[in-house]
Amino acid sequence: MRIVLLGSPGSGKGTQASCIEKEFGIPHISTGDIFRDNISRNTTIGAEAKKFIERGLLVPDSLTVSIVESRLVEEDCNEGFLLDGFPRNIAQAEALDKDLEKMEKKLDAVVNLEVSAETIIERMAGRRICSDCGESYNLCFLKPAVDGICDKCGGKLYIREDDKPETVMNRLNVYKNQTFPLIDYYKGKGILISVNGEQPADKVYGDICRALERFK
Image 1 (cartoon, rainbow, N blue to C red):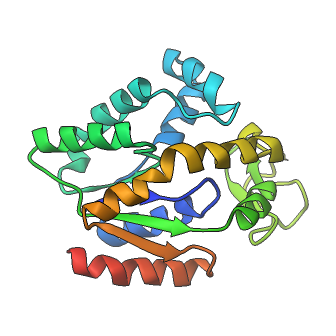
Image 2 (image 1 turned 60 degrees about the vertical axis):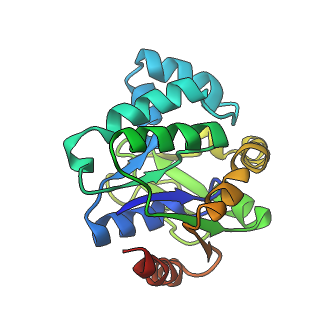
């Protein structure tokens, strides 16, 4: 299956993406992960993306589209993929449609996780990342055994710049203005699935799987 996962920052896309990836045997393609990898390696793409990400802004379409285009032609995407963090606006969605048309393929479904702004802010304020191994924690529902220390490797936990409250608010505003219109775009194509993302993660996943059954 070829699936797009929509949802504001902190809506739980990463958790659900991991489950969908295993269930359907398709690669999880996260533009956020791709950009963070490039930032950590201090590549040209990473340096350019960092200017926008740390201010809670979207990376320019041209840069994002090009990196996704190159990823979708890789062999592991032949039988499908799960896109997380792309497209983020109508221009990117139209670019994706054109790319898939050239490949004689199409999207099967778009999953939209619905979560309130209040819940998003609470979740992201509690998110922590290990500075050594990159393991993720959340003080709301996935706490480390020792405060500030990674259970896996003993590394120090930190708050990412784009998880700080002032940046989260900016990211939510950007999402509302630029990404929210995608909901109507894909609803018009008849492939949108909206799921209550404020439920426990396993309940959210169950709802997603049941909804995807009709698109197989």
